[in-house]
Image (cartoon, rainbow, N blue to C red; front, side):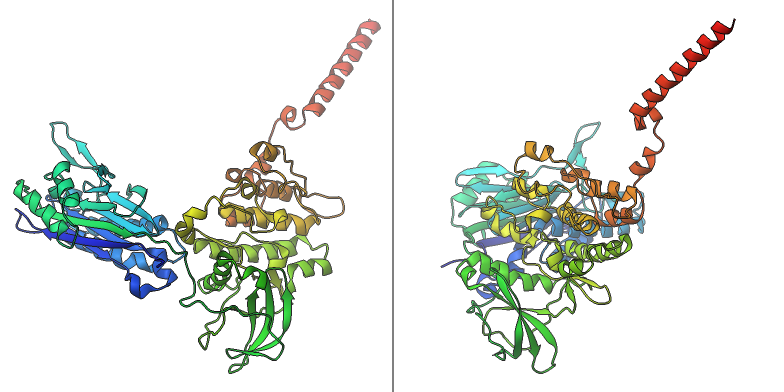
Amino acid sequence: MKNQLTTLTYSEYSSAGAKPINQDACGCHIIDVAAVTSNLSQQLKGHCFVLSDGISSSSVSQVASDLAVKTFLESYYLTPDTWTVIQSATTVIRNINATLYRRTQDSPYCYSPDRGYVCTFSVIIIKGNNAHIFHVGDACIGIFKADNYDIITSAHRTVGEHGGSFLANALGFKSKLDIEYHSIGLETKDTLVMMTDGVHEFVPAHQLGELVLGESLNNTTAERIVDCATANKSDDNLTCQVITIDQLANAPLAIEDTPLPLANALEEGANLDGYLIERLLYQSARSALYLAKETNTQERLVIKTLATELAQSEKQVTLFSLEEWLAKRITNPHVIKSPPRKTAPTQQYSVFQYVEGQTLAQWLVDNPTPSVSQVRDIVEQIANGLNAIHREGILHQDIRPENIMINSAGKCTIIDLGAAYVAGISELNQDENGDQHVLGTATYSAPEYFLGDTGREVSDLFSLAVLTYYMLSGRFPYGTNVAKARTISAQQRLRYHSVLSPHREIPPWLDDTLKRALQVNPDKRFQVISEFVYHLYNPTSSYLNKGRLPLIEKHPIRFWQGLCLALVISHCVTIILLSSQ
């Protein structure tokens, strides 16, 4: 039987130990593998285990520990499904740190942070077949792989001037937080152990190994480890969590809860789950688009079906289902929407809003020489949509005229998410990372894709800049050579062709903006789309500074020609003066 989630055995135990108050806190969120079936949102977040340890110098540290654990377990699962584990977890941890730090600053302990709302904090998130570990403080996370035990985290402590050590990093201690992060590949029977310092400092590795490896693991394992620390005279609070991997996830992600037959060629007048098919809009080797009407509301919609030739590929079916799933998570007037369905589907297909107008490709046929003002307006709208897509942790990867609709009022809408890359989903398919290929259109794709690299937001920016360049010139900045340059040395030989032309009125500084946005090296481009849009209206500082260069640097040939002319004139004058005497 295939599992879409890693299954595990878990135990936890916490005790005040020798102290009157237990300042430790721990908790977990374990997804019910039987109940989750193929719920993608659950798969994308994974199992979560949290441990927090109070600080003995603070009388309110247990408040901080409890708040940190509860807030993380609530907030982590509220972050966008499309975010990676590291983006979701670090965002939540930093927000918790800001809350605790602010509470300390507003308390009588503002000048003694070690007495305020501070605590250590450690998290294990098991997503797919990987453990993502986030750590702040002096707790300990270790892993047993077969008979070998390795400590993963480090103790964030500093040695004092007069001996001894003290905690150097904790939640709420300072406004900026350093988070230790590790990603560990898991195997069946691996066991992860999280312990506060009251446990790991009093349970030697050999005793820990006997407790974990020597006895059957069950819901009392953590308690036995705590008892061992107590027997070894631990003088602190004691908390332990033990996680054993029973079976790894071995099924691909699934968008649909129940596999449905794919909708094939739809006939005009057919009724598909309450959608009346009116006509075929577009057909390609990958998919078909149909104009349909919702029979109850009379709302016009678009039905998208997958080509029969691709239906045999499980990966293609998943990518097809993913497009509608993504459209439901992006809210922006310049990105296509997917309305909620009125009835449960009987076949597999996608439903999208119907966007009036024509593709930008057709618009450019009708308007082959748009003004700079028109181009700016179109690009700014597309950039607005791309920013919304990027905020959800998604890369579009296929910005081109055919994927943009423009209506009679000039409003632009990005209509195709079929080539989108979602980092949060990629974490579940790390075994496929070696199978990188360009999903977008070669003439608009960023150079890094042809090196086999995963795209970044600046990759979409490159595509947007190519589109801008094309609308202004009808040409491509590197011709068709980008797709042919599949090595770093070949890409270094690519040469940018200026967008300026005697046939178009384009400000010279706009060419400087496009040249930077179209740099082959992604690190040399504008790093955010909004900066690129700004410089479509305003020259870059580098362009403005060109006018302040000395003449010898700005025009060296003219400088030396002028100097030679001046010397000739000077010699002639000298000769004339001498001959007149």
